[in-house]
Every structure is written in C-alpha cells, then in structure tokens.
Length: 222
Ligand SMILES: [Zn+2]
Image 1: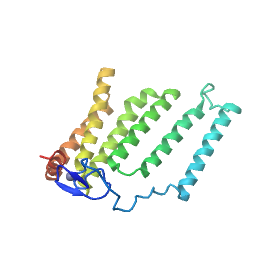
Image 2: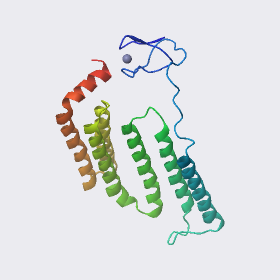
Image 3: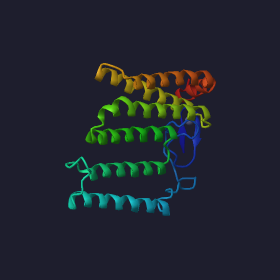
Image 4: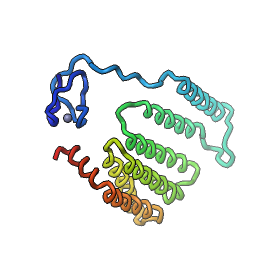
C-alpha cells in the first residue's frame, strides 16, 4: 500500500498520485483496484475518418506541390505543402491531446494556443505577413485566450481557479515584456493584451478571493 505523506492516508491499488491532494505517493503499490482507464475512442469511426482525411490531404498536397509543381499564385518558390503538413500535424497533435488523460482544460487550451501561434508565425513568415502577425494577430489571440481562461476560472467547479488565472496572467505579461525588450516599444494591441490580463486577474481575485485562498493553501500545504 502506498501512503500520502501530506494527507497521512494509505491508498490501495497502483495509484501514483494522491487522489486527495495530487502529490506523489510513497511506498510500493499493488494490483490496481480500480477499473482500467480505457484508451478513449482511439478506434471510433470519427477518429479514423479524420485521420484518413488528414493523410489524404497530406499526400495530395505533397504530390501536387512536388510532382505536379502546382504553386500558389504569387509564390512561385513556396513549397506550400510543407506548411500544410505542419498544420495537419499540429491538428493531429491537438486531437491526440484531447484523448490524453490527466491534463486539465487550462493546460490543453493554453498549449494548443501556443502551438497554433507558433505555426501561424511560420506561415506568416513565408507569406510576408510577419509585421501584422506580431503587432496585431498574436496579442489579439493571446488576449482572447486570457479572457477564456478568466471565464473558465469564474465557472470552475474543480477547484482549479488559480491555474486558470496564473495561466492568464503569464500569457499576458511574459510575451508583452519579451516584445518590449525585442522591439523596444509596445504596440497598442500588446499594451491592451497586458492590461486585459492584469485587470482580469485583479477582478478574479476580488470575485473568487475566498476560493483562491483555499486553493493556495491546499496546493502548498500551508
Ligand atoms: Zn494527499
């Protein structure tokens, strides 16, 4: 039997984390006493269908680009099928993450937003859209994600308010500061993004202060 040193309880089965406080259990486990977690829907028809479509698009794209030499108007040297492949792989990665247990919504949303922004930056670079991307698109998408995290924090029933809020705060502050250091100025959209994140964080502390304090104590064993 494993034990949780924080909650001071013994946990039967083969759990690695304490079901109460999510910290690592000590000791050796035994045979699982819970039903096995089924690998979700990997075999479902929808999963297979989207996978077939993705593979089809990938192969058709590479074939048209490299064999037929079909090029986008205005971009005669651009191997567009490689950009398409990047987006398709990113899409598949996103679908796979939905099936992965143990990742909260905040983590899933934030990770996918960051990956999407990175892919969009690569795409924008090849299409000559880098300036508008860095000055407008990225801060607007980040601000939208911060607002989504704030809404999730307010309606959260799983006592994960703090995770959403800290995620939102970091997504507003860190990229804005990087932007300020790299370009030595702060475009309007970045300043708005930064203010949105700080204002919503302050608002959430006001509205959910009690829940936040409880969560802080729970997570850091105060
Ligand atoms: Zn515990």
